[in-house]
Every structure is written in structure tokens, then in C-alpha cells.
Image (cartoon, rainbow, N blue to C red; front, side):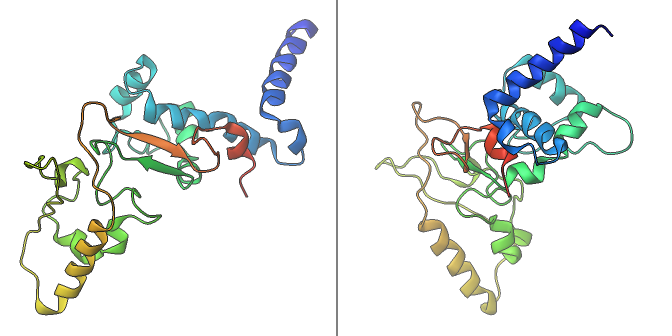
Length: 211
């Protein structure tokens, strides 16, 4: 490889690092820098629903409810690059919160959309009894009534025992303490917010400097 080629690649890496402010953190392991630069692809996958590169990944690996990530890539074979990116999912996702909008891509039970814990963890018994564990938020809301209001309509596969009534009451009280998403044409369908930045947009530097 020629010296000019090596120097050209070095300048490119230096330019990316400068833009991210990474030279202030060179004491961190290089792998952390690498993960930060790749973290943006997890963010883009969730938002760029109609882009060709995302459609190719979905065709190959499928996607989970909501379409925020592909299905897990198991086994020694597969796309090494995307498998490597997906390995940072847990670190990435703990710093993401949903902008619910119409709720068509946010899992009612499994996503952390109203507090920092999912409803299936807060109310495990009710999750087990749910008639639709894969429901989105939109699935468990009624249509607009004459007043333009939507109500929660969560259903279960069985009646509850006397000793379970308090949990059910607590569950619905919890739901009614949170604003019901409004289904209107001018409301964004769904979105993500990066909790480490003030404007909610993903910034690689903040991912890199996470504790």
C-alpha cells in the first residue's frame, strides 16, 4: 500500500474524529470509538423506514415489532458488519425513548414508552393474561368517539381472581395517568428521542462518552 494512500485514509479518520471531538478522549479504548461511529446506524435503522439499505437488511434478517431493529442474528454465519452493529443494541437502546405519536410502531407491553420500564415487567401477571402480547399502542386504543377522545381498550384471555383485582385496578390507574396518543393526520406516526442530547437527536460523541 502506498504512503499517499495510507496518509489519505489517516486524514479521513482524523477528520471524522475531529468532528466528533474524540481527540479529547484518546485514553478510551479504540473499540469504544468504533462502536460510537457505528451506533448511528442503529438510530438510522429505526427512522429511515423506506431507505433501500434498510429494506435490504429487513429482507435478509426480518424485523421485530415496531421495526426499530432487525431480528437477532444467530449463529457463526451471516452479515458480519450488521451483526457487529447489533451487538451494541443493549447499550444503545437504554438511552433511547419513544416519541409515541400514533403508536403504530411502539409495542404496548414490551417497549419502554411511558416510564423507564416496560409494562410487561411492571405487570407480569397481566402481560401473561393479555389477549395480544404483541399489541402496539394503537391496537389497544378505541377509535375516536363523538368528543374526539380515545380510550384504552386492553383485553385479557380470562377473568381475574379476587386477589388479582387490586393489580388490575393499579394497572388501569397507571394507564389513565398517561396521555392517550392522538390519532390525527398531522401527528407524527412514531419517533425516537436520544436522551443524552438536549434536542433529542442522536450524536455519536454522546454515545462514545457514556459511562
